[in-house]
Amino acid sequence: EAQVTQNPRYLITVTGKKLTVTCSQNMNHEYMSWYRQDPGLGLRQIYYSMNVEVTDKGDVPEGYKVSRKEKRNFPLILESPSPNQTSLYFCASSSPSRGYNSPLHFGNGTRLTVT
Amino acid sequence: AQKITQTQPGMFVQEKEAVTLDCTYDTSDPSYGLFWYKQPSSGEMIFLIYQGSYDQQNATEGRYSLNFQKARKSANLVISASQLGDSAMYFCAMREDNTGNQFYFGTGTSLTVIP
Image (spheres, one colour):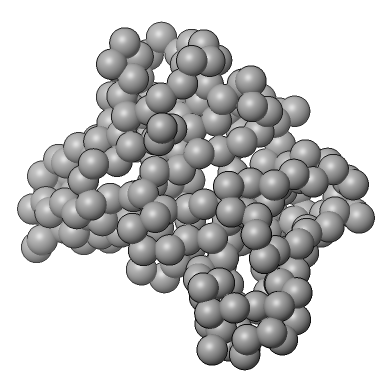
């Protein structure tokens, strides 16, 4: 089944404790991206990657890191989480090479709470 | 300036009635795509419908149709014969040709279908 898999679904952590949210897609998509969703703000892009070893900042990159060493994986790293990073996070992928009607495919989301 | 504007934070519709969710966009790129996503209370993001800037006809997918008015830069989602399962958040998104694969999202509209 074609899908984007992100883990964990729920995560509660404390300020300053490094964490990684994994994301993997099995659709051979070139493009992958991370978003955070906060009430009233919609989805805001954190980082995106156009292909392996190519990453770029989105609208809200501060406090986050990413890497794209393999085409299928795009982990999100919070080196020193803070309470203002409490949010719902989505990983998504797409394949622009298949046409611009190619939608974003989303993972099921990770609800992060930083205390 | 906001790329995507959804001015209706919340909407109510009677079951079996039609409802229109508004979306306006801002771009100077002649080539772009518009997408609508549904987010039920379970949290996942579900792709509903796509409209390309060069498409001559309004997109339709089952009970979903897109009222695309290019000159007004609007891409309203119309849901016909509303069902209780349509209660969800709805997000409008845009991808511009000249920004590669960047997706811009609106803040969403919460739709409640009343029995």
